[in-house]
Image (cartoon, rainbow, N blue to C red; front, top):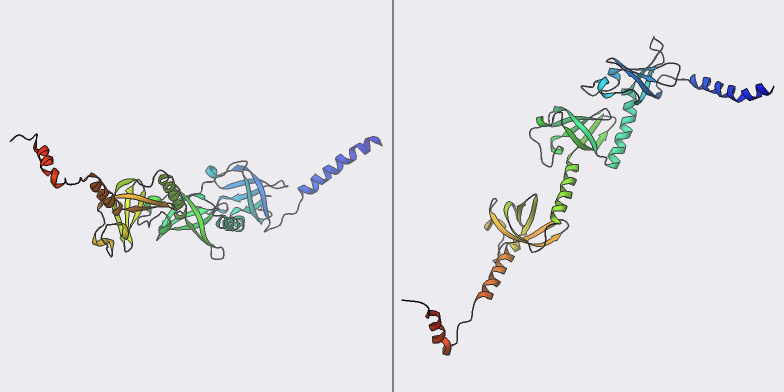
Length: 305
């Protein structure tokens, strides 16, 4: 009797394992399994079930140029939808594409909310932009969102890696819009901040007029830096618009007069004022009438005629 009592818990555990192994799986269920083998035609999953799961390669991913043996490996965990509980050979037929349609959009919505940075590879060139896939979903990157400026020729981007963010999506219409521009802009701003941190008020340097606005001229200082010379800081005399004095492409000398919120305020007028002060300091007083002869004589004393 003691022997039977000791075996009772073990038998109960064994019965539980049997019951778990015969868990009910129905068509439409979403289940997760572990990849145990990969061939050119299908991926086989261990489902912790009496039958193995089979995912045909065409039902694993919609990405063009998808090669199962290169992208799926034994040990990978895969979530898929049950298409048939018996494929005719005793296996459970699965589709990762169907499961992905449900799971992917939830992930994409989260990425949109969190502004997640995503690494993608451009897989296609279309009118007005390029195509990349995120979570198996086809995404469109407009040419205006590929770089900081509009990209006329998108062909060089084909098969190139890119960092993007989800900026818009519509699950019902299957629309996913991606952008690299926001990430590039943020990086450019960070680089600009680092460069500006090395600039001090009072610095005098040369730059090139890159654009002219009614309120002033933007000066390219090189090394990715630029600043604004307000119309009131261009010259001593009052002018209505900068283009009466400057034109795009002109090389000018400027002085940094302020740095605020990562922006450089420049002045050409300040240099003219400084030059005037220097002339005043270097000028000398004319001698008084009584001293004129002596002073002039001393000036010519060493001159040989």
